[in-house]
Each structure stands twice: as C-alpha cells, then as structure tokens.
Length: 151
Image (cartoon, rainbow, N blue to C red):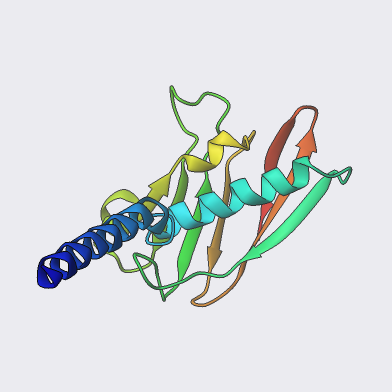
C-alpha cells in the first residue's frame, strides 16, 4: 500500500513540475528572440517609462547581443516611417553585415512590435561598427511618443 501512495505522489509531483516548466515557456519567449524584437521590446519599455513622467524626452542605450539570433559584426538599424502603417512601412529593421538576408533584402531581422507604444514620423537609419552601442531618443509629441533619433 505504501509503495502505491509513493508512486502516486511521485507522478503528481512530476506532473506539477512539467506544468510549471510549461508555464514558463510563454515568458521565456521574451528572452529568446531575434535582435529586432529585443530592440523593439526595449523601445516599448522605455516609451512606457517616459509616458509616466513629466519629462519630454528620454534617451537610452541598447547594446547588441550576438545570441540568440543577433549579430557580432557591423550592423545597421532602420526605423521605417510608421504614419502609414499597416499599409506600408513601420518596421524596425536590423541588418547584419555579411548575412545572406542582408545581401538579399537589405536587412536581417525585422519587427513592428514597437508600434504598440511609439510612432516614427520620418525614417531613421544608422550604421554601427561591431560591438558599438546604439543610442535611441524618444520624445513626447502631443499624445504620442515618437522615435526621433538614433546614433
């Protein structure tokens, strides 16, 4: 009788462990993303922080990561103008020098996740050397927060 209770306990415990691990997967996806999505999520977080303050402008630095789905060489960052999104434009594009996608399409990774929090009234593009930190500037413009500069 004791062996059966122990077996049931072990199976229940294992089931709870698996359920716990599975519950972490959706949040884990936030950390295992491509380079554009990581930058886009950081833009959203910084925009939310700016919105909650009386300050009109906020700049932050974004350090590129090579893993997962990142880059270790020279790179470009492009914020497409977003005022006509979703008809056209609005993407945040990361181009990794030497990647096949960069040669074929002009970018390696892309996202529009930042558009939930910001708009981009004019296209912005910067080329950065390997390992260089990106500086992004956000500004309150009326009821909107805009990406106004990248360097």
